[in-house]
Image 1 (cartoon, rainbow, N blue to C red):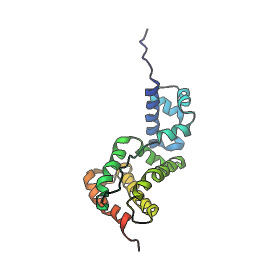
Image 2 (cartoon, rainbow, N blue to C red; image 1 turned 30 degrees about the horizontal axis):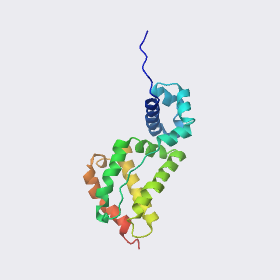
Image 3 (tube, one colour; image 1 turned 90 degrees about the vertical axis):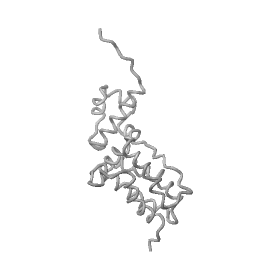
Length: 186
């Protein structure tokens, strides 16, 4: 008789979320199925439904992440890239949630809305404390720069951008962020 392993609901749930992030990132929201995610984890699709109810709920939870941006009050504008870029790069390279969400946002209104919520709830308020005026517009410009960088570096893998060291990226991006946050647009 084969030995039975104890099941861990938390571990199974985490495995489903990991598989969902991978599928949503690779195939987009529309083409990803609950059945495929269940197959990736080796569980019955009914178990995925039991934990997450439906694909929308699964996507919403799989797409949750916290940028954990530092408080920028008191940070000199010329030091913003040095402070922010390591955090952005950690999210892009280590978090496991952001890149699949970025890929999925190109084809999925749900993913795009989630990205907008992250921007509005986390990025814009953090940058608003250092913007000289028109905080929403300035934060949006910084967001476009950072998202474009992430897309170019990690999705398209544009050389030599994909090979640049994080400190080198910060040196190149720093003046652009400073410009967006402080210069008079005329």
